[in-house]
Length: 420
Image (tube, rainbow, N blue to C red; front, side):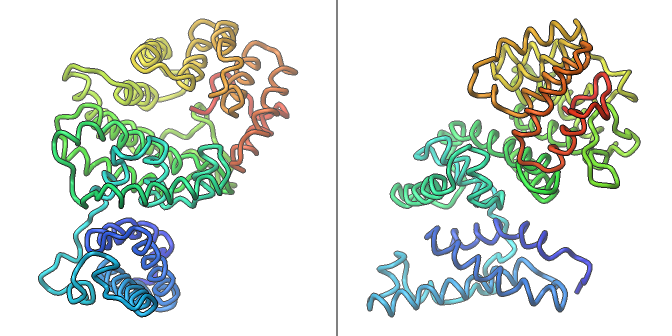
């Protein structure tokens, strides 16, 4: 046993794995989630008081199975009919715990990920369901990410589960002809999970290491399944190169430290080497996609020994390619920073101005943060103060808000210090 393991973090990591085991066995999403939640509640206090057992996932699967059986029995008694009518399997099969012949330690997270990305679901539903089932985000957190009411998001997730039941989706890796259709959505979902972990959209903390670790783990699994897919390699490289900087992103007081001011000796060099190797190999194999380009941009940042050594012309060229390959207003916001560093702040502001009125980004805090940064570079202190103030009002992340309020007050301003 180990008293030093963070139980909450461990249970958050194990939850999607156990949900996958339950779905493989029973198939009823709502009941499996309820059983999992009961099991998490049951073991949490015990593990906090007595320590984590030697095989926590196996024990949690066993407890969740028991809670599932309890649900089946309650439903059977209430409706006065056989369990086979409820879940479509023989009662004798349903009401037994996993035996020695079953792989209790099998991790079905990747299968769960593909099921969440089923083609019968809309893209927003695929993303929401994955963030809920694999990312461990609450319905409220997901609603905030989508800028919709919590009740709307709850209905969306519930309908997605119902739709999966209606189409009779099997709990297995999709066949080859379906696999290709789902991969781009899977990439996007993993990207969102990582981003939510690296910079949380709300709350007192700047990051959630459990989400970044889970996104990296699932992307590694996807690459193992599809080693020929250069965009999967690019996505993994992007995550590793970004995650490498996490130890330097906050100071001792928990305040955000912008990229240009980070202590680069704190960056994880092993992750940087792995990420650079991945993106270099992927770019050499032909077709270039947005994740490879974003990884290449991250690599240029990570390779610079100091902020002044950053190769901004190369970063600008990569952003121009990214805007060509996958036009995206947020990529244009980031390109405006590179334009400002290479061609001057007025050129960066002119590019940023092309997004005025674009509802996808024109009300986002990063849009105003970049405007403030470029105005400060141009010597317009009052304009920068107004922009940073507007940015601070538009983020639900407390560390980001403190940082932006500091910038609005004229403290901590430095050329090239905008957060990536």
